[in-house]
Each structure stands twice: as C-alpha cells, then as structure tokens.
Image 1 (spheres, helix red, strand yellow):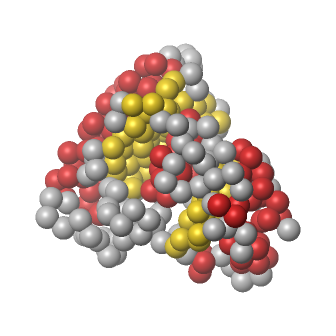
Image 2 (image 1 turned 180 degrees about the vertical axis):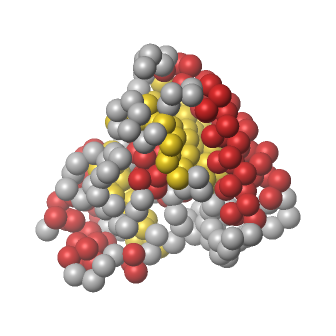
Length: 260
C-alpha cells in the first residue's frame, strides 16, 4: 500500500469535517439539548448520516484503507492505514454548559496515531493537529496551558458506574481524590475538550476500539498522550481502559495514581 502524503490526509480530513457540519446542523436547528440517544433521536439520525457520508467519501478516495466507526462497524481494521469516525453527540454537554455536536476524524498508521481532527460545527470551532502540522482553533495557533499537577487538574469520565466494582473502581477513586475537579457525563467529546485545553484528563473503561482510536490521534496532535491503564499506547485490540492527558507529564502522574 502506498504511503499517503500527510498533507493530503490533513486536507482530506478537513473536507470530511466540512461535510459533517451541515448534516449535524440539519438535525439540531431547533433543539440543542438532547437527553438520550434513542434509535430515532436527532443524535442517532445525525450520527448515522455523518458516518454513512464520510465512509462513502473515504472509500472513494482511499479504497484500500480500513475504516472504524460506531454505526457501521469495522472495515479492514488490520489495514496499514485506518480511518476512525466517532460522532460527538454532545448529550447533556456537561462541561461547557452548551452542546458541542460534531465528529472526531482520525487516521492511524499501522495502529499508531497519525492525524486527528475534531469538528464542532454548532460552535463553529475546529481543531486540527498532527505531527509536523500546527495546532489551530479557528485558524489561530493554540497554546494550551495545562495543569501542572493533579491538584490543579480537571478530570472527566463518562460516569463512575462504568467502572467495575473492585480494582477498577478503587483505582479511579484513588485518582479522583487527587484532582481539583472531577466531572461526570459526556462521551467521546471529552477527548476533543482535552485537545482544546478545556479539561486536563479523561479516564474511562469498557470502551470499544472506535471509542479511542480517533481520540488518540486528536490528542496526540495536540501534544497530549492516550494509553491504557498500564501505560501502553492504545490501538486496535487494546484493553478497554483508557487514560488521556493534555501533557505526558500529567499523564505520568495520573498513571501512578491509577496503578497505586
């Protein structure tokens, strides 16, 4: 398989984000608050519409690449290059206090993060980052000021009930006791907020491959780090336990707390 040009991938990822925006806006013109993700809710309909269109475009431009996505499963997940599509439903949008509907788009090279894009079309915000590329928000360079220690950090997770009783919950509670502010709720948009500098840490468990393949590339592009709870970089077939941080230093400190 020919090695794709990184600039070509970045330009194409931006095109995909532009396609995602109008599809999502179509379903959220009147009601931005969504309390659940029922089969025919605006969130689900928008998710399916976004993934269907993006898959069509990827398969037309890069037919030999694999694709991973929630609504449509996996296509050739063991390919050298895999596009990951992870719609952001923004349910409850607990961190910003306003919805951040959008989509995470990434490509991994032999299971390692290569490029990530987060698009939040309702807020007209876009973050693009990757090796050798600038990290920008609305076209301007971003210089995040991450917490320097856990005592200053904001920690987000979907919900404590996702952690199994026993060592998972114990490990999470150990980390939670050290941070300035723990926050619950949300979903994959947490990772976009790490990249944008809104929160510092995300810790989750019971995730599927497509839940962290795109976030890993997005956060890596912003200079952060995503691993499992053993410190191993995530990829296809990883453990479902994920720790993401805005800086490697903060990640190392959080990992020590998780491991006790």
